[in-house]
Length: 379
Image (cartoon, rainbow, N blue to C red; front, top):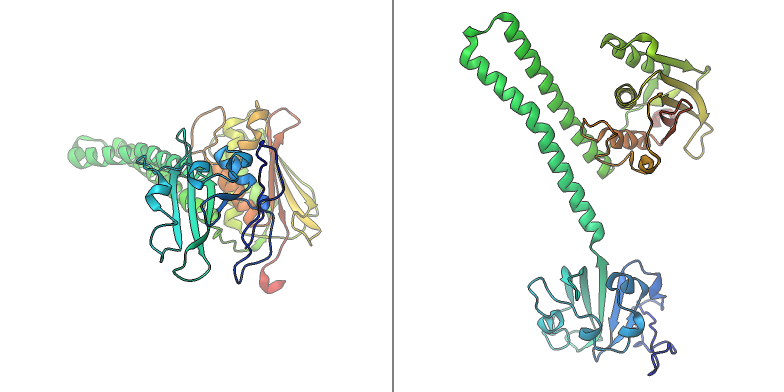
């Protein structure tokens, strides 16, 4: 690949494009280096910079006009993590002739700014002198965000596991050591607590597996006919059986609904999370509207939409764009903050879409739409 750089006149003003060595055999035609997503720095056979693209300026905060024509070690004064000058250490022009590249590694710019650097030594012939040194630069911020996300996940899981496991260990150890001292009612209470905490651990592990599948794109959807209105009704009945007032829920189904093919277990998971959020964090009546809707999938006309609204304080505007991210929690603490992230992943795995907004009554409103779809063997 051949690239075109720019040069500066002696007075510092931009001049005509700097000459770049002609393409080596097999290289493609010239392209604009500023179109590349990564930083690109090219030095000629004398070690002087002939190309310094816009992404390199963004990553290093060095202007192209200040870098072009300068020796590489001056334009890009990199050091390793032990403070050693990188170009002196690696000696790309005077080192071993068999070298063809430098693998990506973390290096430091003046001021301690960290960048990911890799390099390729371009030779006209095998074991010949270096004709061109091509250096790519990438910001480390994206990698640091991923690492922070993983660290947060580990910390959250450790915290969430500690409480139920401590309870399970404490009650089982107490029962084993002092079984005869407790009444049957006391034993039952402790065993029920152990059972509930074991369920909590199981749910957390299931959430982690779901996140792993969502992040890797391996979340399987097993489509079957789903009566979405009946599914919502079952979840309402479960909340009523758990002690919620029956008149707190209002279910409105607009018939006729299109036949919906979806994964019933995963649809139940979405409904369970949205209704639980409305009950726990909302207030007043929880309204669930099930209606036909335009399909979010291109090529299909009809979909099914479910809207869950409450009359609570709602979600602050500044938090709307973070609701479906990992570890987001509302004003009331509790839970892992992973539920809505998983909900979004499940809906999108079905080819659907989900949004959050403000309900007419002032509370939160979640709306997801699924394409009617069909399993492959019926398509």
